Length: 374
Image (cartoon, helix red, strand yellow):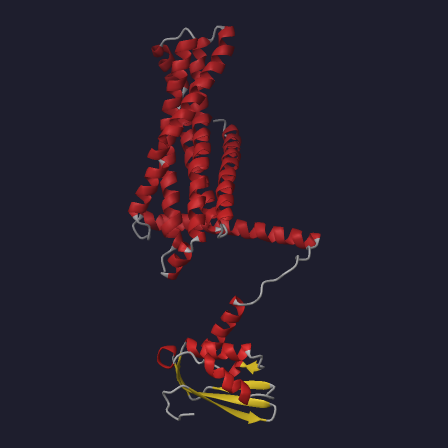
């Protein structure tokens, strides 16, 4: 072989059943080409060698050319000791071997009951830790963003606010208008029997402001926005967009999670106020149509029945519901798999989790309000 330092070369030194392969020169594919074709000569020369090691003290620059060369030696069924290779080359060879490893065939053995229980407990614990971490990041990074020290872009927040607010007005109008009308009709049927028609306004006003407007709006947003958040983030997970953000050093939380959480927390109180107004109008229309009431009497009775504490209770619920829905959607999206089926499962799980979470949280609010006699 040539002794030129820049020319890639190898020399085999045998010691009985063992041999050392000395690599010299620059093993660069762009300059010297891939060296895999040269392994045929080496394999012939190494016949009878049980173990082949490397000496790279004379090795200059190298790239994928040396990786291809060593892989070709592996393919020739030589027993190779890679200890003498550069550490980076050994890591690349291990990665390549892992990528080309044959897939496992045959059914996996069924795990025992204690194993399955333990895995389920560990998975749930990891999920709880992940949720806690997400809540902590929301508080810390949200506080930093509030004083202008966060990495969240205002344009992202405004875009999410438009999607979560203005785009949801139609469905919020339909649902809460019908809810107000249904409450008025049910109340009218029962109250008319006792000659208490006017108290239908109390029923509609208190039920909407205290409970129904916040709960129904939250359920609508859980199905519409919470599922969309999970699907969007899960799709980005499948397209490796989140991996790209991490590779470029862009904080995933600031770019994806915080704008969505901020937008929904900001828009839920406004949607709640709008839902109360729409529901009261729906109750007014039905009450005037079914009962012998005037619009003036209905509005005055509604104003007298609704107290400020009930309004603030409903407003607090809307903020809590918005936080829950946004965090659930983002959390499930970030933990989703990378297939199309995983995206669908993430969206479904986010909707179910959001709705159940809203009902449970509303029950907690009711218990606390009852304890405080609100």
